[in-house]
Length: 259
Length: 280
Ligand SMILES: Nc1ncnc2c1ncn2[C@@H]1O[C@H](COP(=O)(O)OP(=O)(O)O)[C@@H](O)[C@H]1O
Ligand SMILES: [Mg+2]
Image 1: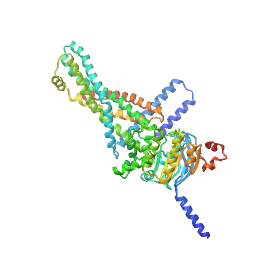
Image 2: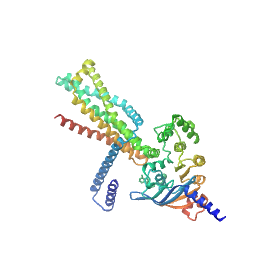
Image 3: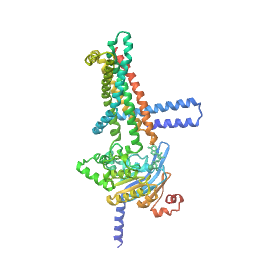
Image 4: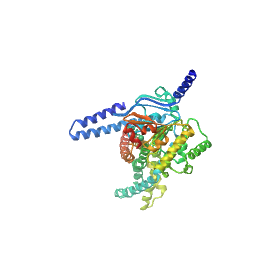
């Protein structure tokens, strides 16, 4: 009996550690004199939606840009898929980065390309070549996923903010990333569109079993999408918990995010 | 290295803020600092260009697309300006030459000034205004809206894809545009010659080609590559390193034109010195 429970526990333990996809230990990042991230410790598990809250300018974007390799960390450890990135060769690191998708705050659609060319861009940039037919199918599927099939021949300037963000999401998802990083997916959108985006995030989680970090100021978005929430203040993780837990936090500053 | 230099400038700035100095010295110091900082980072940018341009993979598709766009964009403007310049130059030179009874030299004189100097410089200035500012604004707005970051996340080296292709296109297209501009300018001159008097096109052009020498054509042709390179590079530099903010776009476009036009004159001056040295 006792042995059985212990093995089960062991199994659970194993599963726990195996399923960590991003881990940060004492991560530091500064720009010149300005220290942005002081001591960040966090763990993201496979399949979970982790929401990061924090005031503007606290370094939330910097944090996820470090994960995807757009910025380099100054100090501390960053583990992707349980591998310390400082120990990896450039090629191996690129391979890991290929499994990570990033949705930029503005959608970051390429203005000089049509919607179709935007979606084809990441496909053409892969190592493995994709045939024209496959490419058409993937583009079609990606557009259907976000409900924008009829925009295929438009240019980004003809689209609304919400559509741009959904297309940015479609372009990111076309490579089926294992980790998704969302930088303020609902900022600048009306409540209805921002709810649509939140629902898309949930769909993505269900359909592709992605693990996601979602940066947001939007209480509704956090409530809908979060499995777990981390609040960042002054360069450190100030609080962690579920929406329900943090909503009732002792700390009035933390609570203020939920009012 | 870069960090050390930047820190030096930061420390210096702080020192200036705390220690009161007489004002003119502070201003001149910061302006001089800024200038050298700019020269330094442009040098780094240029070095990076030469490093990336030889390293595969090469972005041929984008290079072809940019060359087409860059050439096409300035074609009509170059045509109109060159025609007018050729015409005006001829009309205005006629009385002076007539005074010395040298009216028959008109075609040759105008042709030499167009081919040696006016064609390349005017085309380069138009190119700086149209293409240099366009590149500056485009890259700056891509920078502001995170399109450059997005490219990097898609495993595309944005420097190669955006900067290298544009600089190469500008370098290759400007000489072609200058040749086109020279031709249109000469045609303008031919029209002007025929406004008064009557010269057949055969006589006009054979007179010009007989008196043109290799030393008129070659240096003028070579320097256009440098014009194109400088304009492309400065446009890219200003756009790629622009401030993140919407005001950064206008600033990048504006300073690209100013800086590139100035550079055109500086290169022209150096080219003249070198040619005259070589011809002695
Ligand atoms: N490339 C950069 N160079 C210098 N400072 C930067 C850079 N990127 C971000 N910062 C600074 O880092 C801080 C955090 O920025 P950011 O992560 O964008 O904040 P947010 O939490 O709103 O996303 C800001 O104060 C910003 O000025
Ligand atoms: Mg941000």
